[in-house]
Amino acid sequence: MPFKKILVVGEVGLGGLRPESLEAVNAALDLASASGAEVAGAVVGADAETAAISLAVTGLSTVYLASDPRLDNDLPITRALTSVVETSGADVVIIAGTTTGRDVAARLGARMNAAVASDVVGLEASGGDVVARRSILGGKSLVSVTLQGDPLRIVSLRSGSWAKAATDKSSGSVVPVLFELSDNDTRVRVDGIQAGGESGGVKLQSADTIVAGGRGLKEPQNFAMVEKLAETVGGAVAASRAVVDAGWRPHHEQIGQTGQSVTPRLYIAIGISGAVQHNVGMQGSEYIVAINRDPDAPIFKLAAFGIVGDLFEVVPALTAELSK
Ligand SMILES: Cc1cc2nc3c(=O)[nH]c(=O)nc-3n(C[C@H](O)[C@H](O)[C@H](O)COP(=O)(O)OP(=O)(O)OC[C@H]3O[C@@H](n4cnc5c(N)ncnc54)[C@H](O)[C@@H]3O)c2cc1C
Image (cartoon, rainbow, N blue to C red; front, side, top):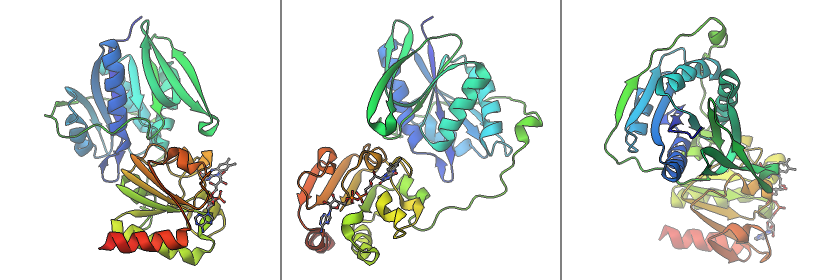
């Protein structure tokens, strides 16, 4: 049966709507334009009103809202989202590829007996079905899967695969949804959330500019160069796994398959080779600038701008030039 209504789920983060949810909006709009389906939004969480308003100003006509202090983790969120999906009448659900998003997508799929695809980087409509392109083997290969209807198809995205939707449209209506939680749904309670450090994961997720350093820096103290450039351009500091494993930088700064996925406007990679496990975490950046002395380094395949040279000469010169 052809799908008629797509529900895009907005995730509530520490500072309101998580930016990855804006990528999910564009994924939903793409699929809608290929199929003629309607698009609505859903926000489920504790203190979720602000996030719902942020989702509504992407131009969605309706955003369903379930806001309740008990909706503070994946268990009750999935339960309430089930009610929201039923109320909305959606037959496709699109969720951002965050840790929570992937978890909720799988739980919702089990609860609603739906077809689920995760790590999705492309969506098409074909004969009433949803065809999803999934990234597998840490981004090395792509597989196409068809999600056949009845009753529901659920897709969680790979971060950075769509641009973020603009939030300057006229606001759609926010519609509260009633839901019930059982004792089972509230077995886990979040007692407090501690944000990462100054350059921590939370900051990286929302940074417009990221300056990342790798093993090419040779010594941990040489990261001072990365920090100085980051300070000059108002960016956050990140790292490859090689330097995190070496204990030079904290894990919350690691970008890649086993670290953070980020989608800044500008990603400057210094002394990073561009291993596939690193690239999957940053390839959605709008502009990638690579500084590496090896002209054949794989990072240059992704980079919009590349500087082949010794980082110990290039980075101080670039910082001095930019600080003018
Ligand atoms: C299961 C698994 C998961 C992984 N997850 C991640 C992950 O999440 N994130 C991640 O980053 N990696 C991850 N890795 C590791 C990944 O495969 C690479 O080993 C790692 O990304 C390499 O880090 P690097 O680029 O800093 O170091 P290297 O690969 O050693 O690259 C250093 C680069 O610096 C350049 N260089 C050296 N000196 C200079 C100089 N003076 N001037 C300019 N350039 C210079 C070199 O040409 C080289 O390209 C994972 C691996 C596995 C197997």
